[in-house]
Length: 217
Image 1: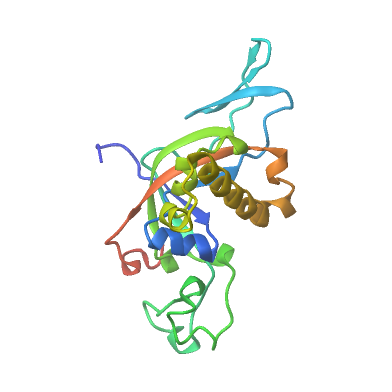
Image 2 (image 1 turned 60 degrees about the horizontal axis):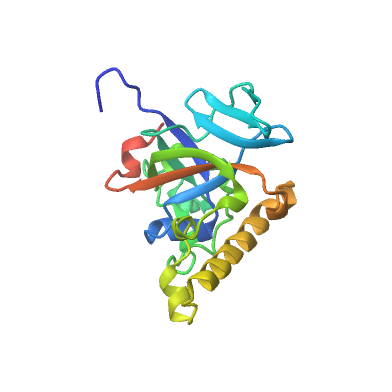
């Protein structure tokens, strides 16, 4: 990293399913609702490091107040918050043996202690660190088939289930992404049909950094 450039880290929440997709190397992108949403009638929205700018239909261009992406910009890091628990007999150890709900089928301790919501995970307990490679802005329904794969959907599964026609492949993959999106966001008022503007964050996992290095952070 060049001298004088501060490394920034931002927390980000993921469900257990998406945590597994990241650990398996399938998920390299996430979409998050922009808050507040651009005003009604905006036809195009362009992201810059100072925020997003609105372009109205008819050629008139206006800039909205800067809305910074809460997930940083290229080069920043994201530390993943996920549902976890700390076994009672580990509470007084310097680096406790954290149990993660996404590993519930791989960990024998997970039934013994209460789960803690992901929003309450401290930095030192996080096991996944991501590097932001790109941030952009688009409408939710503009997602491409390639971006569906990057969101964690496995193309080999669709091909093995005889979805071989390119048009049908996109239709089924996009439909599965829509269902997943609505499961997570419809109750918040941002369902697929509303086609909200979203942050599109592309990332890669940084491996080899242990939790011990950030204890106390």
